[in-house]
Length: 117
Image (cartoon, rainbow, N blue to C red; front, side, top):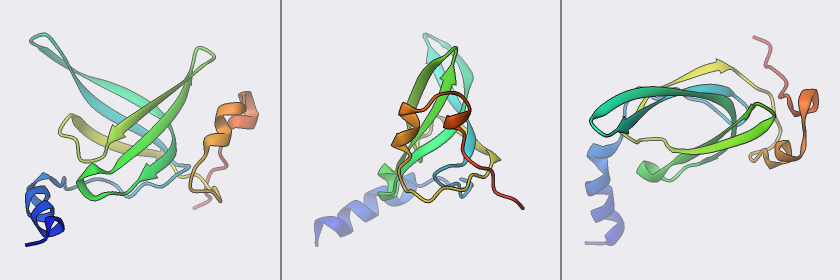
C-alpha cells in the first residue's frame, strides 16, 4: 500500500464540515477557542485573508488585521478543532493569490475592493 493511501485513510475522519468557501481578499471573522489553564474562551480575529494553502487536512490560511496602527497576521489551520467557526464579513475582488503587498501599504491604500453583488 502506498503512503498516500495510508495518509488518506488516517486524515479522512479529521476533515471538518461546514467551513464556508472563502477566498483570498475576503474579510473573515475567525472564532478561535483559547484555553487558559482550566478556563476556555472564544477569541474573535477579523481581517483580510492574505493567502490560502490547500493541502487536505493540513490546509492553512493567513489573516491580517491592523490593530492600533500595528499590523497583526495570524495563521490558522483550516480543519483545526480549535476553530469554532469562520464567518465571511465581505467578499473582496483581487487578482492575486497572495496579497503580501498589503504589508507595505497603510491606511486607505491597504483596502481591498469589495465585490458588488
